[in-house]
Length: 315
Ligand code: CP
Ligand code: NVA
Image (cartoon, rainbow, N blue to C red; front, side, top):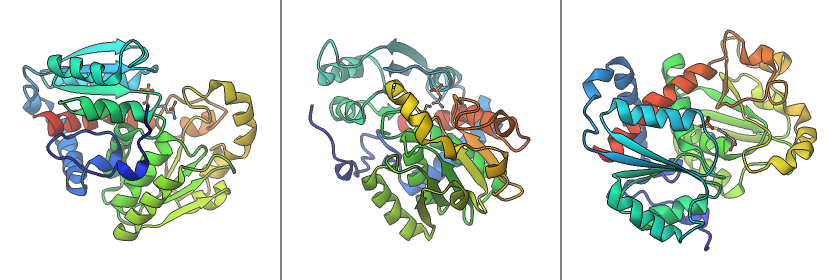
């Protein structure tokens, strides 16, 4: 299958509003989505019929607790219906056929895939919106909930600093892009060989120049975390990388978010993690259980952010 270069993933297509990647939402759409999400959280009943008569297909190639359940609940709470399928997408038949079956039955497709190419191909052939529920490159739905959590906690985005210690992975990419466009300073500390994708870094750099925020890549976690309002980490071994896990544990040993590292952030800093967490690997039990850990607020906000996203894309 042909790869889709990141540089060609730039068009925002309002007429066929996919969320293949974070930048498919315009700045205005992102700001509006966060406002709607907060309103939905406050007044869920006002939206109880928003998706009446609409069905959504969930296609997941990988395991999920939060994403699957919050999408299913979001759809139910908006009055819609969902169907779920787990397993390889496009193994029994071409992706273009999968997409053109689904779009005869459902009004949107939510897909969790190994490869971003699968998302791109589904979106290319589907007449209904395709939402990326995690790929190897991005996790946009997670980051919508994350910035909603920051908005609730700190109000304004301008002047905030978010530090990420660990792997330059899908979650790091989505965070980097969204922080850069929202004016949040972003610093990421990774070991050599695990830096974020250079094309995505270049995109984030461009966005940061426009918003006036800073973007720092370093191999030093203390430098990244210094003065941060939020300290974020994710697993060192993502789904699909299990064979590399011994090598990764070694490479990331100095990148754990522990009490010592967390103490270098601001005194009011929050700890963030998309979950699931591997305690005592990327984060200590003491930090994830800290009074300033907001990991379950993030998980709760998955529901509200995705309800707002579905409403924007489908209503
Ligand atoms: N954070 C997140 O996406 O969790 P799941 O893998 O459980 O969906
Ligand atoms: N980076 C992790 C995120 C899981 C929500 C993974 O892709 O497995």
